[in-house]
Amino acid sequence: MIDLDAIQARADAASPAPWWTSPDYSNTGINYGHGNNRQQIGKMHGTGDAAFVIAARADVPALVAELRAAREVYAELGPILEPLRVMHGRHLGTDHLPCGWCRLISAYDKAMGASDGHKDAAVW
Image 1: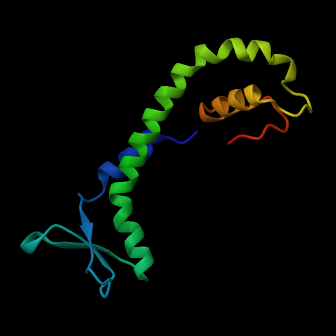
Image 2: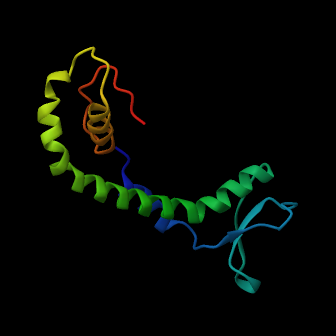
Image 3: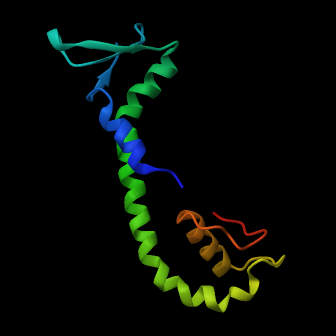
């Protein structure tokens, strides 16, 4: 499972947002701050790289927050899915074509970092 605390710690340790470069990407330096407080923190080898890195400064913390919220919702589903897990337990570890309920249980287990008992379960 992805270590969200480690990712968040790296994002928190990075130079403060917003990061920017020249509007037309003619200078692929990555900067933060403005006026006399402006500092270059890196230089990229292309406009695509610069755009990606600049966006990542805001995207990474937002993605971490979104994934934490999704994990909270998934954690709440555990007790709801338990009766289905018991009912469909006979399928675990078999070659059966998984039903919709089995796919749901498999997706939940995968999201929560548990191993999947289905051999061929397709997870959306």
